[in-house]
Amino acid sequence: MEEELVQLLTLIAIVIFIAFLGFLFFLKWRQTKKFQAQVYHLPTPPEKTGVLAENNLLTQSEKILRGKLDGPESVLVEEGTLYTGTADGRVIKIVDGKVEKYINLRDDFGTRGKFETEPHFGRPLGIRRLNADCLVVADAYNGVFKVDLNRGLVTQIFCSHTDVCGVKCGYVNDLDVLDEKVIYLTDSSINFQRRQFTNVMLENAPSGRIIEIKIWSGESRVLLDGLFYPFGIQIHPDRQSLVYAEAVKCRIMRYYFTGPKEGQLEAFASNLPGVPNNIRLSADGKSFLCGMHVARFEGKPAPVDLLSPHPKARRLLVTMIPDEILGRMSKMVLPRYGLVVQLDLEGNIVRSYHDPEGKIKFITHASDDENYLYLGSMHNKYIARVPKIV
Image (cartoon, rainbow, N blue to C red; front, side, top):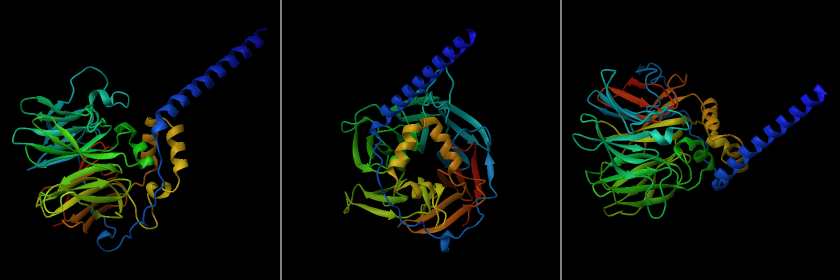
């Protein structure tokens, strides 16, 4: 009798477990109904020759605040002072390798820096100087904030829950400041949040936008839409155009927002040797720096190359694997190769910095001063500093 009872209870437990898995699968299926994987084909990755020849310029790097920063995705460099945002929702000022000040985008109780709490506490990404007193920060979930670290003030400029041409922002990413009146902002996807970044990569749908925001009024409009995972954005020194990275397309585009070519869109740099993330103007204003989250070269393609013709496989991954686990898995399978490219003002690559050993990897950002490059990453636990080649 006892044996039969044990068998019955075991059977009930198995049925409940299967039903629970089925329920989770149903929830995941409902969530991914909007996932529309696209077939696409990237050109054969470039060779490691010429300005892309392999070197070790990133290998001997200094790791600033190693283990004390969680995902410093973007870095603002100002005369030896660094500003960054981290996964726990903080905006941090770093002087002489030490945290001098920080402020939370949202003061509240709870566990920060977790997958499930990230939307609540915010995830600061792009960071720029607005004026002498304030920074301006893109929060992936909540919009754009003006941050005064000296006075300890955080003021929302733009709420991502506001309809912009009838659609709310899904994944606020990077921004640049035209002047104290106008900001340009990338909304990487209207379908998925930042914590679902692997969905955005795998989908490769034209669901991204660039938004123009009036700082003082909060008014906004769509400048460009139908973009493929727009990531970093940088106003060109001509002040008539901007450049932005389309991550999955492995390219940088240029859009003219004023002047004689107003409204024109053109390729700026195509078939890059990696998945481009943030773009920043160099300290001397004569070139751009772009971190490659994942490197790709001839003979060593990246996952974006391998998965591009297989939309069913990409959909299966998104449907079957929870978002948090999928994000963690991506870090395990991505090539561990550090890469930064430097481009002239016409989009030609003029220099590259490599770490073939992968000591510095998953680079999402590169900024410089007179002597150094400063490298940020959404995955790493430090800001890397390496000597700059002049």
